[in-house]
Length: 199
Image 1 (tube, rainbow, N blue to C red):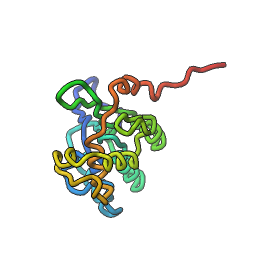
Image 2 (cartoon, helix red, strand yellow):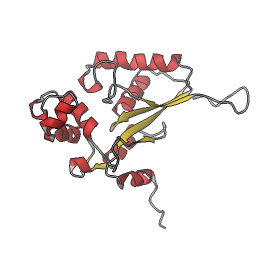
Image 3 (spheres, one colour):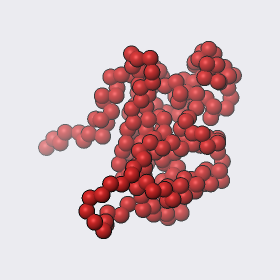
Image 4 (cartoon, rainbow, N blue to C red):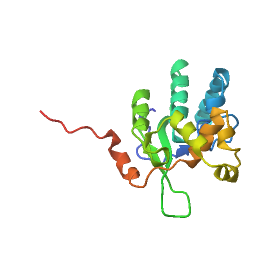
């Protein structure tokens, strides 16, 4: 993003909560996990055009439990040597367990200078109570979805998780049901803190 502005301080619009096909809240068609390479390419091209044509100056991709949409978008930009004039930040939306009768979500927004591996490492440090404190991964989400009972699946419009062969549907269903333990949300800020320097 360019830092050369013709005048001093001014208000700019930022949208720090957009979803991609990697998120279960995507309403634009197929999920990323079910797309072939051509479909992914067209989807990333559509995202690029939408971002370029928007009057918004900065975005955060805020998919549930994953950086896959952000990583796919960055890889698309790198592959075609596209230099956006707008910032796009990696983010992740997380649901947390809470003693309330409504959903409680937190959003994590990270630097757009972080590498793909650093994002993967961040995700791998998240432990989810619903997954028996397993490390958060696509495979763990799919396994979790297949362990849920039929009544929860039917309430949300899914078939019995045990009968689902489609990993994309299982992944989507698992994303909907996961929750971080309450105390874990306080630890998120420290995941990127540097280790104390010892000499």
